[in-house]
Length: 161
Image (cartoon, rainbow, N blue to C red; front, side, top):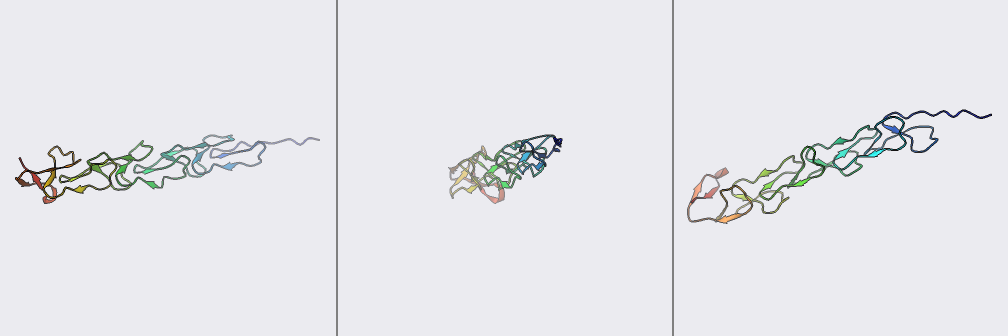
């Protein structure tokens, strides 16, 4: 006498990795099972995450990143980089800009301070006798003429023409 085989469809968030499996397995962190009856799971892309049992990958919070197959976005973007909405990884701030860790945007260096390399954390003060240009590019410092004027942020002296 043959026994009847009964199959049960796995719920969303679960899957049956092997044919004939009697029970369903919860989808691991970093992977999703977005519909019922699945036998394999889908890995989340970089910039997305999924806790165990998820039915969809979620975008990382701006300022954070993840590798493919991550259960959470625990890696903060380092200083000198940022990630905004829809950024899959951290992006270097351009020269003349900087950012603290876990930032969503870059901030222009104050007048009298600069960064000459993209992705630099923290703006450096111009050496004595130099200042950033009037174009506020803040990428380099220029030698000043003999005339100085107050007016920079925080009482910084600026070159006057």
